[in-house]
Length: 79
Image (cartoon, rainbow, N blue to C red; front, side, top):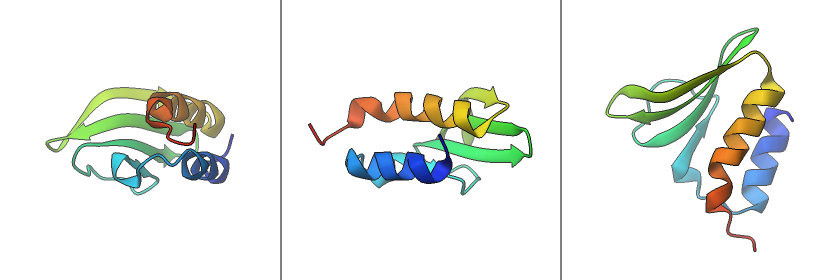
């Protein structure tokens, strides 16, 4: 899965955009974040109070996107 595909799925699931941040970097308050840190380094973490919590590191966009989607699947509203 690519970032573009991930964004489309989240939109179709009607997951509120204030719950997550994709590719913006930094530490937005209380959001699940997906960031490409380098060519082979993707991070997924929860940003809270200026800190990365539950940091997971992936070597591919596909694996990072799959994990990110699983984390947000509980907020799916299209059903």
